[in-house]
Amino acid sequence: MALALASLAACQRADEGSTAERGAALFQRCTPCHGPSAEGNRQLGAPPIAGLDGWYVAAQLRKFKSGVRGAHPEDQGGAQMRPIARALGRDPAIEAVAQYVAGLPPEPRTPEVQGDLARGKLLWDRCSPCHGAGGDGLRASGAPPINLASDWYLLQQLRHFRQGIRGGTPGDATGAAMRAVAASLPDEQALSDVVAYLTRSL
Image 1: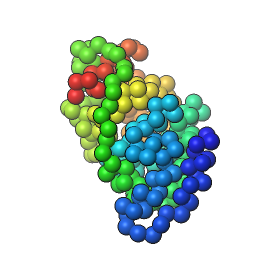
Image 2: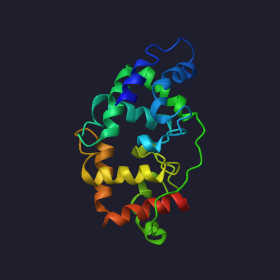
Image 3: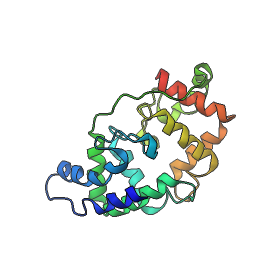
């Protein structure tokens, strides 16, 4: 929480200039957790977000801002994100920082999660209709690209969906869809299997 408060204190006013310049200035309040290059911080539970599609980053910031995401008492990361999103204010600021993040080059991921890749491949059939065969995401379904995500974060989010920590707030249509998919996975090991397949094979 201290890092979130520190980031709120930083960059209270973005400099006038282009959208890219404004996005870069606004992103300074994100760096205490996500890092200067949006590379993420495993110890803080902050995922890498560099290279994420701008539309998805903006959509998630709006969810945090409105309380559609991050309101569950067990979602500590979401609780830290909510005041950050609110501090961004109006949509132009959200769009600016989202586009800035989208333009940052993603760093190679280092797989950590162990799983049965053959079983994971079969389970992936439940995910590919929305996220695409290669995990590139489909904007039409509101599904983000996940083939660049860290496996530890994907596993955490699948657990959150299964437990209702994420996707249970009214108004979160895409979250509710993900919650149903996560709940359909047969057991806890299945979560690791599908994540391992995604991050090691795609």
